[in-house]
Length: 316
Image (cartoon, rainbow, N blue to C red; front, side, top):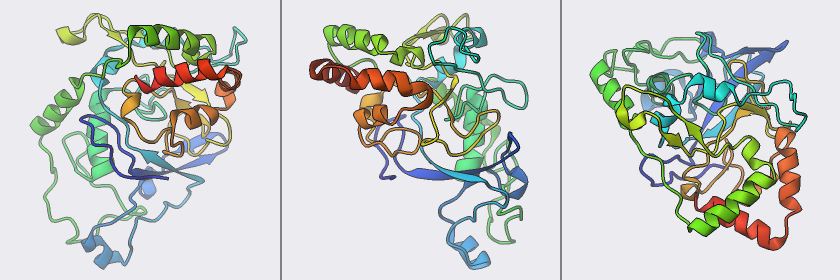
């Protein structure tokens, strides 16, 4: 399902990581006390010698696991600068308009509106960057200064010889700045294709979740102030049906995912959260739940309209 990294600056990768969670009586457990939600698929030679394992075990209490491809980080500064009110105005958790789409926000444990991560489980770019260093790469930093455990047990003595914290606050801030100012790719096709393809995209209902534009407001950083983010997302959670369901995160149920931003879609070789779709068309056809209506209307398009839509998406 997962392949090699896509060599695009700021782009996502097709190499997968594994996640786990516990979902009991409607309550999500991130398994932090028994190893955390990120399950490393490989371990260092030192950890292998100390524990006799080739990969980190699934934490006790896990009710589900999931693969995740690495997401692109371009445009992150714009997403971070979109005000909460802009996102919440798009929410319709009770589907009051009866269109079958009922996006809802994911709130973090500290009360922040989630906008980063495949389940919108992280509220700010700063949190996203600092948490990724620890959880994905095992690099302790000023925000997360303590190493994660293996199945709830600390790393054996001698396995990690680098003193904590391993990343200074200055370097962490530099990483945040780098991510914050990676510009998103502009549309690569013609103006006519953008017009025609965008019209079909909206007509069949894709734009109900993949909202073409979000707007930032006044921001201390001039380049992020009062900008249009053509990200094709509402940053809300949507139920995508049982076939795509895997783990919970925060308030996000196993079948709920944040609407994936589509800018830079042309640089990806695998699609959906776990890379199971090998083409844009395959990804559309796997939409279910709240995406079912748009998928059915896509399948009902004429060959010419479907080709125009796919060319449009392939130039994002």
